[in-house]
Length: 389
Ligand SMILES: Cc1cc2nc3c(=O)[nH]c(=O)nc-3n(C[C@H](O)[C@H](O)[C@H](O)COP(=O)(O)OP(=O)(O)OC[C@H]3O[C@@H](n4cnc5c(N)ncnc54)[C@H](O)[C@@H]3O)c2cc1C
Image 1 (cartoon, rainbow, N blue to C red):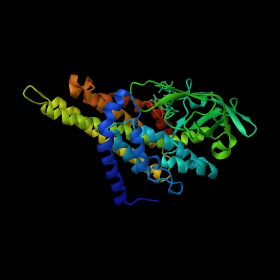
Image 2: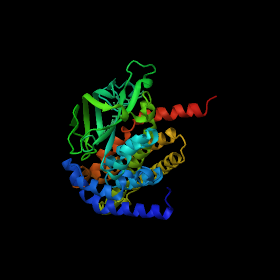
Image 3: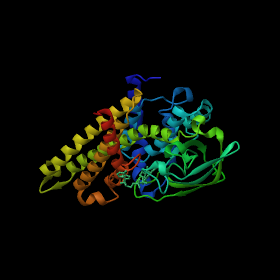
Image 4: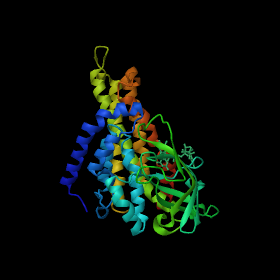
């Protein structure tokens, strides 16, 4: 299904209202209290956000990545964290929709689209983040089941969600290492919300991206049916994980662009209110230079996000473009949040003002979904491949 420009505009208007009426009023309080925004989740369900990019066949809205990125930007321009509730959820859904068997799609996607099942992606481990092929979590076949042992680190939505895309080694000795990696779509809780036997979850306290749960997930003899092996075939896990990261990177890029935009907006407003030396600080050239540079970075970030999302929508390989968007937009978020902090002077450090949250949240975008060091390496490798001599 493709949405007309008019319909897309109506969806974005609805998101604007959601952001103004429901996200903005609770952002500061929930962030400072590190309290999960359950009420937002209920509205997100009503808005269909948990099915935003899931196909219509499975109950989703089938939105393009470009529209999805605009939604994420709008939310992040006010509060970045809530986007995390449906972002890794949708990456999991995309992995199942792109690589899963029809039975797996039927089992997971309709429930994920309505938000009854809410998921995340469990890739990172205590010893393996950027070097994903170094993971040690193992799934060993035992009859009609696999037995999983190991632990995952920094898993968003682990505590408040109830399913995960779980990357494991099914053949730890395989060479090259990625051939021994497989992906499972698992439920972590029963229908009553209790953790399944063999899983324990420990919440991690964070300086940023607060209110949204990020946790360590430990598997001890956790049993998962063979039917939950995504695609029904061992050895495809790394390919599936990396495939899902393109959409993830576009999302993080959109969040970076949103943070940059939000920080700029707060700074422009404050610079008109605050007076020094007998005039509003926006009339000082030093402040104007900051705002001018921030505004240019915001627009550039938005354009890179748009380009990557459009390529994704046409089915083209876009790891380089998604990497560029993610790298540039997240750095733009950090730059704008820092410059805004300078413009706010001492008041930036007061939790009475929103800008300190943007400052804390911005840096995460440089690390999540592949660090910005890794993004530049991916970009350079693609340059070499595309312009090989
Ligand atoms: C709040 C939060 C939420 C997260 N949510 C999730 C989630 O839901 N699911 C999930 O699976 N993961 C999640 N992560 C994990 C995140 O994806 C990893 O932290 C990230 O990939 C980096 O891995 P690492 O922390 O192990 O750093 P490392 O890989 O140890 O890297 C440390 C430093 O070394 C650099 N580095 C590493 N290798 C190279 C190289 N070859 N060349 C140059 N520099 C290099 C890195 O860029 C970085 O600067 C989350 C992290 C955070 C903080």
